[in-house]
Length: 150
Image (cartoon, rainbow, N blue to C red; front, side):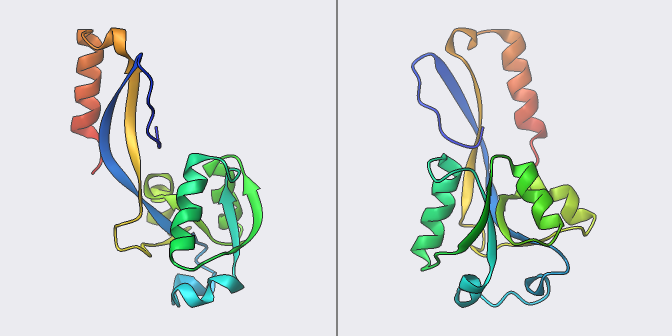
C-alpha cells in the first residue's frame, strides 16, 4: 500500500518509503537540464488521481509548499496510465520511484529527484489482525522484508 491505513481489524508493517520523483520523457527539455521550480508553470503536468486521492493530496501539498501550482492537462486513475502519457512525451509527472524503475533502466524515462530524497510516500503491507499469529503469513512478511529493494 502507498498510504497509511487505520482500522482496528487491520495490521500494517512498514517497509522503506518510496521516493516520489519527477518523471519525463528523454525527449523532454528537462531530461538533460532541469531548471528548478521557476519553470513549472510552463509545463503540462499529468496527475495521478483526483484531488481527493491521498497520493494526489501528498503531491499537491508538496508542490504548493514549493510555490508551484502546475497546469494539469490530464488526471488519470492509475500510475500505469500516467506513465504511458509521459512515455508519449505529453507532459511531466510525479511518480513513485518503484513504479518507473524498469523504464529508467531501459532509458525510456528520465527521473529527477527534485527533493533530494525528502519527498516520499509510505509503503506498507496490510493484513487482517486475526492472522497476525499465522506462521505462514509471518514467514511471507519476513520474506518480503528481506527481499524488499531498499
